[in-house]
Length: 613
Image 1 (cartoon, rainbow, N blue to C red):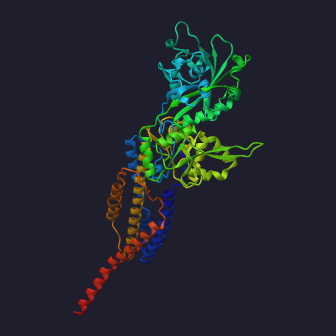
Image 2: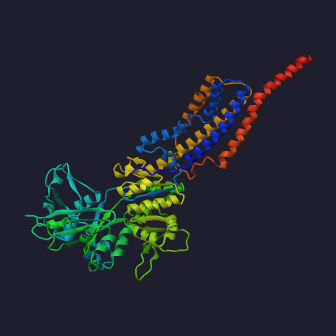
Image 3: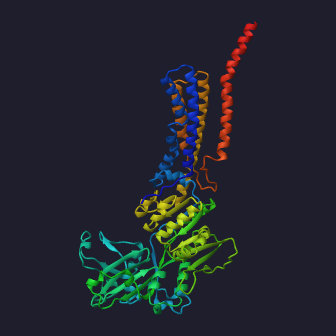
């Protein structure tokens, strides 16, 4: 339910370095205790002065100082209407190397617009499918099963006098120009057994309504079956009818073979390649023996079988204006962008090309994997996308794969998965659990992975990703550490910029606090060796005036305007950091020792000259 715990290298190295500093402080404490013992100091005084070494080397203000940059970044994100529930993920966002995007509602508009209806008759023996696309549904008989399916297969309801529900259902139902009648008020509607009724509006007929359908049972949308079914009854008849809509690949498998046109896959690919979202519609009449009592005991697999294919419902999903610019910024910054969607693979490919996620200078191969059977072995096929050629030897060939083929790769070709994941750009028809596995594969390959989505089917991926960004304040926001009230992907670059700013600030403050601690530690040890002590006001001045004020000022650094290709460092225990620190400490020891010893030697020389005189 909540974001997955993770070990960020910056925090791990910080703990290791603090342990090293603690060991150094212990050595210094033992040395100081030895000095005071030989000077016959009291035990209380020895303990107090020895413990001073610990507070100097490992200052109590270190954790607070390191979070100053994160706090400032959180405030700036809040002003941008981006809210963070896990502040440690802000630093992690500065190391993002790959971003997974959902499609609908994230890269494209949340609402779908009705584009047209392609009935079964319009699919057969047609060279141009757009010629038979029906955009005015009044041309179709209101009694036809395809109109009945569009009017009844949904989960809409009236709230405060207006229809509410899934945007796709709303667009589909409004296109039919039918009416939905529900019995009872909003607060009592679900307590009665009277069915909802759909009928044509009076614009479509004169006199009595030619058809009324009562929706008596509903099988809600299921992410596994990728479909939805309702059972209705046309008033005046005794038989019940199943109306079904869903992903074409799933509905086709549930339909009778003789009702499926031979060119259905090519038609589906053409619509998908043009960026349209396509739903398949089907229906069947239940046997006469099915009555009201047995209706509620029917299983979905029995209801959704031996269907009669009716046609395609074509919806238009427009790209958000900010999507292309954000994707281009990320690609310029060498951050890989991947689409992970539950929609049709070819629709995802079209949107990916439109938003520049798939550059024009590379080729995309569609990978199709078929499972093994008793007669045939599992096999993999690579095919070019519509209107493109394919050269397998070309290094600029990337892959697109759907959820069904992903499952086959997992079971029959697991050795292929790392290669396909590293070269994959578009993943379509992915189930929620498959999205989770994909994100985990990216993480296992060393990518600091972000996930940006807006639906409940993205919640699992948002949870396991290093940085999850939700564009919805509903289910997905519970699992994601970041939630944006601005529902477009521009929030991704803002989170990355603030993450880099916070990480650089935390890194700088940590190095400053470390150098400050070592400087004060070496100074104190040298002073203790000479029998000199700092006063309480001097300690207060060093810790409060010098350290705290400078840390606050360093933390209030604004991020850059763009995302640059160079990502900030996150590892502390590296030669690049330790070698300069070592030479700084050596030089400091030399200079400090010279400052303390030189004046004493100068006084000895002056005394010698006075005696000679």
